[in-house]
Image 1 (cartoon, rainbow, N blue to C red):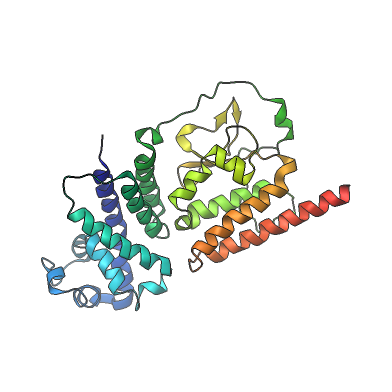
Image 2 (cartoon, rainbow, N blue to C red):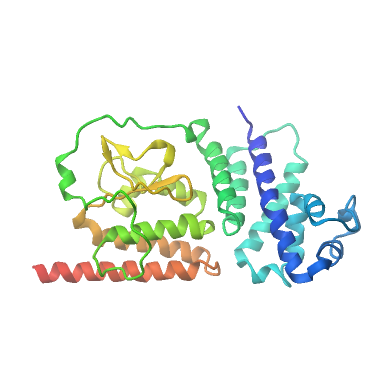
Length: 322
């Protein structure tokens, strides 16, 4: 069984494969053909330039950018370059990962604790979430293994438990495919459109806004019941792809796979949509407040407005019916 130190090592390897070409591309855009001489060698101390060539082919130079140099360059070039590309939170994560890498490089025989390893991987997830979706997924898999153990990727639920319950008639109809993004919410009165679009934005467009802890919450049926109002037993908003879409012989999740690894719940009680919208609005508001300068925060603010508007519309409809 892999140790936590090995999980962090693999995370740093993935981080390097993302940051080295990213840093090189950004420096090339700033300094053109002089990106190596002016963008790299000019700002590194002599000890940090050790073993680096003076010039060479781009492919060879990029291969010389290890994770320590990538993070250092992003920090040193923050004011004149990377602050225009990333949010202020990213610089905090960069500095934290510089410390993480230094600790990793000087690690002794004592393994990392689960909490420390998870924190390191979660910070990597946040840093690359806006840069590389595939790498974000691989880092999340490592973080899940640290937090939940090897069974995190292989747990499957018995799909042959019981026939459809009578309560299913109170659920909104399920479509096999999730609705496509549509900002004209409320026109069709479909709460699922909001849910599907929101999760697509969080999981695929701006995954750095949704930390590993929030992902774990959204995969916890008890949390989703108590906080989001998902009323059907054993349902969580998110579910790993390898766990399947079926619960009690019924498809409870859309067929569409989000971010290459998640299903999103499609089953919501009709009478609870108003409360569900308010709960989701509070959840998203917290994400916005946590990272207000992230490029995706403005988009999430639109979701908050849409969810609040939807809840108000539902309240008005209920009042008229009475």
